[in-house]
Length: 180
Image (cartoon, rainbow, N blue to C red; front, side, top):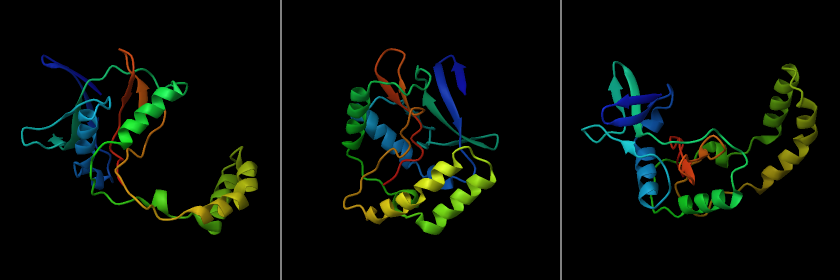
């Protein structure tokens, strides 16, 4: 939500229910470290107690400086996107959030079978294509192994979160899912 005040424009974002682990402030610290390292991202506005969140009439919110960003665009310059991602991965930030199972755990044959069954039951138009890929997906999982070196990453980079900036260049938003 955009908030206009006599001190300027701000972006106000409500915290999602059920994501209490994201209220540890680590994403705000990582976003700040990334900005300090030259990664274009809105500044986190902290409370007078230096917290990244505030309780406003029972709603947990966070505030960012307003960033003039364009609509999501899947055709951004890949070289610029690659350079931005490289810069993000060079940020010297030692996070504490653990690895998320999404990045480490196998789905397994039974899991893929269940997903295919759900897609078929829902009448998904791509259910047959997914079923045809099932064996290959199970085989590819054999290559999953523990990471050797961990570093904090954004973990939600896609066209919605890397945007063209109004004044040129790119801007990275939505850092809440960051972690090792």
